[in-house]
Every structure is written in C-alpha cells, then in structure tokens.
Image: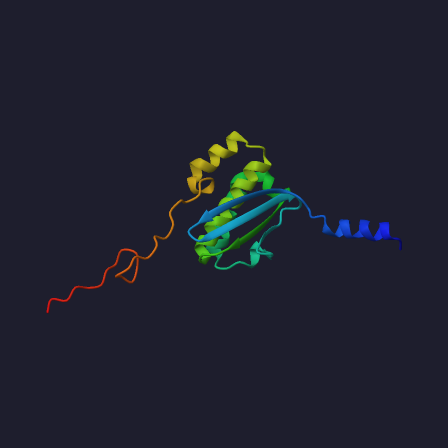
Length: 149
C-alpha cells in the first residue's frame, strides 16, 4: 500500500456524515440535533427512542415528528443532550428536533405555524435560568430565619 493510498484511507475515515444541525436549551439541559435523509430512526444519546422510559417522555419527544407528518419517515434524527434533569433534557431534545425538521423543510411557513399553534416551546427556547445563590442564605432568595429571643 503506497503512502497516497494510506492518506486517502485516513481522509475517508475522518469524513463524517453531514446533516442539518440545530440546538435547544431548557434550564441546564442543552440538546444538539442532527437531521439527515434516512429511514425514520430517532436516537437520543445513541439510544433508539423506543428504549426511553417512562412512556410519556417518549411520546412528548415524538410530538414534533407526529406534527410534521410524512417527513418523519424519510429522515434520521440524532440528538445529543446533556446537563439538567430528565424532563429538562426531554424538553430540550423535543425543541431541537422540531427546529431541525423545520430547517430540513427549508423554513416551511405552514409547518412553522402548525408548531407555534400546538406549542410555542417547540421553536422558542425557555430563557429562564437558575438564579445564583446569595450570601446569608441557603439559596438565592431564602434567608436565614430570624430568632425572636
């Protein structure tokens, strides 16, 4: 094997499948979704969506796919989510999937209106964050209890 063939082989290995990316946040959770043409598989942190429990979280994440209709069967969605709790992660991944589908459809206005009418949180991130802790108390607002005697 010549040197040129080795270099070509290394380049082929490094080449990643490209797709449309989108991101979403909720509290401390951040989700990045990559959407590309495929067979309709949805993976969250390399796990197929069917393995996720509880079931209501699974259905919650699937909502944008069901609203999009036929698009969901012709694309593969891969979501990487970290930080926060399980519900914050599910809200973030749901929003990332919705944004990715919308971008895949090249900003389809009809679908965008459908998403906004169903739930605005599909396309708009929640800007609220945890307030930082202050001195003289256990949390941000709670203060040490005053003693009467």
